[in-house]
Image 1 (spheres, rainbow, N blue to C red):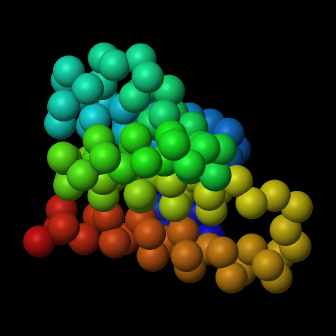
Image 2: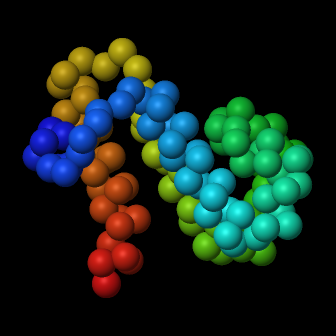
Length: 116
């Protein structure tokens, strides 16, 4: 699958490192969009967590903040979707065959605006 869809890939990493890299780039994008907000330790804590680990109050706070930055909200949602997909463990080959198109679709959807 890697050779077919990512022919120029040089390194294949485990999901922990992929999620770490996704988070690193997400935080860099966030700093570009709102440098002041990115320095807020409370918001940083919320942005780093998986959405399913946030309390209702934390989700509300994060939503209110993201409403002011539509681009950040889209990037955050993508990061959450990608992380959730990458966190799936203990899958058979047959189950992974279903997940691969979801991963590729998510990557292509984010990449498509860059191609236009």
